[in-house]
Image 1 (cartoon, rainbow, N blue to C red):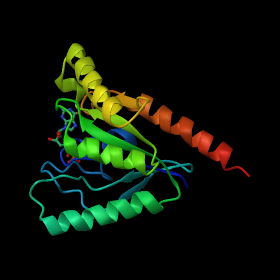
Image 2: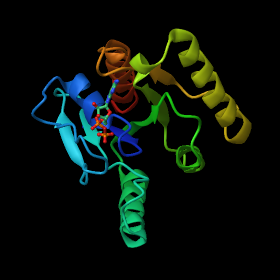
Image 3: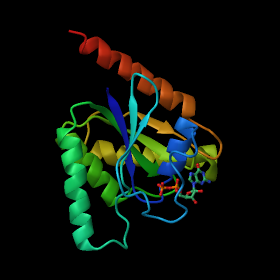
Length: 183
Ligand code: GDP
């Protein structure tokens, strides 16, 4: 079964987003404090795909050793997971582009791992500010990494914004995946 991974810095709003997407609040609990989501969690959305909750990265309070272990674990997941169709990199829309996120996306690009960006907490900004933040981000990515802008989504878990767009996108690329792999 194809799967779609969600990853981002601790406290970016990943648990809330997964709750919004799955609507099964008991399955992915919001942590309330950063760095709590530790292990890979699989959520079976329907017969056709899994949502995968990866641990948050970049939490300042974990040791260097933990960071290395984590990195190895995640790296292996991304490089070896055959059924991983697309990953969603979560970015808090309020923050200016962070090196750790840019580096991560660069690494994904270099290794040919398809990803899309999910901007979170859009309810915290006015529409104009949202546009400004998105443009800034895309500019960074286009300068450093890509010739083409990646697919992106603007979401707010507290306002249930971007849910249908994100789910439709996954359903669409999932159909494509089954078409391509039919034979
Ligand atoms: P995680 O560590 O990435 O799983 O992040 P959580 O989902 O636990 O959220 C971290 C904090 O951000 C919590 O205090 C949430 O209430 C808050 N948060 C998450 N999503 C949103 C959102 O869409 N809007 C707002 N305003 N706050 C959010």
